[in-house]
Image 1 (cartoon, rainbow, N blue to C red):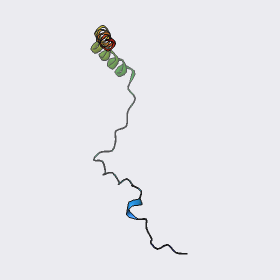
Image 2: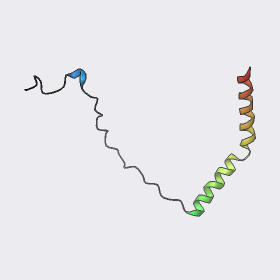
Image 3: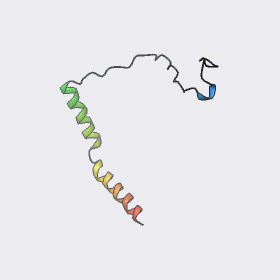
Image 4: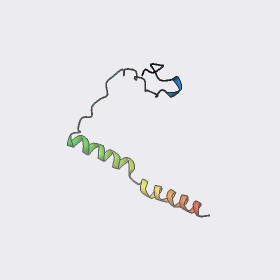
Amino acid sequence: MRASYSSRPAGRCKNTPKNPPAAAEPPRRSIPLTPPERARRIDELRTALAGTAPLFQARARRGEEGDRT
């Protein structure tokens, strides 16, 4: 027995993803940091975040108090 049509009706076709456009540059591969570079970055983060924990905790407490009322 032969089907009366060779392709699926338009309303029943699966949505097939189109090919994404070719990227201008291939993704960069991550290179492991050297121990001195890793230590330098950690020190920078510690310096940038120094003293922020109490401020963050105070804001969190104020937010929690506001939710209780």
